[in-house]
Amino acid sequence: MASLLVGIAGGSGSGKTTLAAGLAAALPAGQAVVVPADAYYRDLGYLPPDARAQHNFDEPAALDDKRLGADLRRLRGGEGARRPVYDFATHTRLPEPMWIPPQPVVIVEGILVLALPALRELFQLKVFVAATPAARLERRIARDVGERGRTRESVVAQFARHTGPMHEVHVAPSAAHADIVVSGEESLPRAVDRLAACVLRLAGI
Image 1: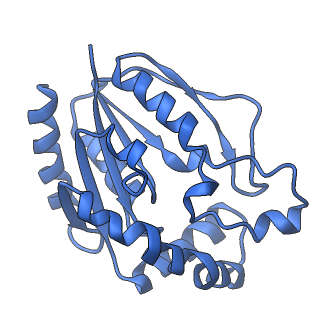
Image 2: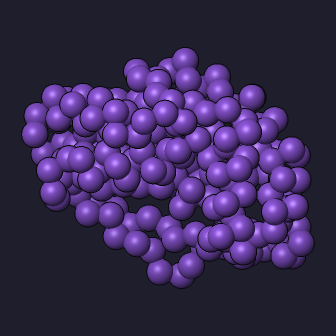
């Protein structure tokens, strides 16, 4: 049985991951799985550690979009897939992939999932999460310092060097392709309820 693919895009720190998790939890148990596009970053193990930290992770070339697209087509067709597991501290992939079970609803979240036409065309429902640069930066700092072993200074520098400019070039324009635009700074339950109603109708569950 074919699965419904939902794409959730938005700037880094906009609230995509939180919204995706909330949407999955709002659907009937065992009916949805979340796929983070960040897991598909390219392995930078061939570079010295200092060079990895300077890499531009906010441009399309940083993402292994072909593998992501292939996995999403499998999931859309009702099959499972094995996705990479990315170590953000070392910017490398771990040796063992993670199994994604087939589910009626597949929720894919990532900054570029609506920016790349080959990925965008796979989604039956496209969502964009909007948030101000200030809100996105503060969330990015909290996440990267707390979870990825970064310093506040390095996060701020990366945001100014890559994240902010690439958002304007690649991410923000992709909002034009969204079926629904939600605020990442307003009531999450309201946004989740709105999306869950759409998903239940489209998936027929």
